[in-house]
Image (cartoon, rainbow, N blue to C red; front, top):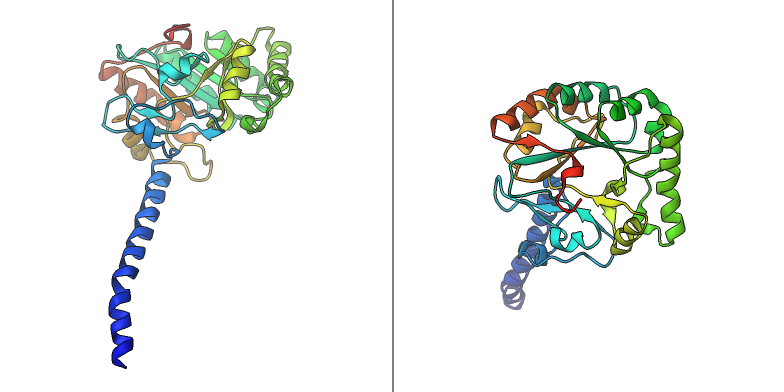
Length: 283
């Protein structure tokens, strides 16, 4: 090999190494975010100075330390100005149980049985399909004293809806269907589909008298054909539980139905009790 070419390759090698290391670092960060099942959190959020993002984002969490309050895309103080919550009373060992109900997959009655056994109030965020196809189960939720909240009629990306009247139509059409089906009024708690939201959405919900409910603990439980094992579920839900946790579980999950009775027992053995969203600070 000519001497000039050897010298060129020797000089180029350090630069290639820097480029490769930077690429591996970025790839590692992307994989870490994917494994966690959560949206990445802005650097300002990790430092504790998060504000509500102005543009549309996915709700995301970071868990700096086991058993402690996680960090969200926005602080609870910032969310409170829009009547929104991702945490409850962090001074108490209390858990707020919430369930997203996109459709009936054969497990909701088992979940309701576990809640009844533990005298634990729940909040079920339903969509139009759930009310239309499983009216008896939806009635049971209300009959047993649980909150039935608004997850929109069609489960769209609400952050893309700019007009107040269009936003209202998604929520109020579900409220009307629930009223017609059960004879009750739908509770004014709203959960954004897929956790996608914007400041404008928070304002729109508040203008309609709704409280927006995010979460401070969840795990990847929604893939019907790829359900987590019991051990994998416990590995996420037990060490990350914390005071004032708003827990999000999907009622479509076979794993959730199978473990819920034991999960609630384990949380109780850790000193936790269960409270209704009606008991959130500021409600």
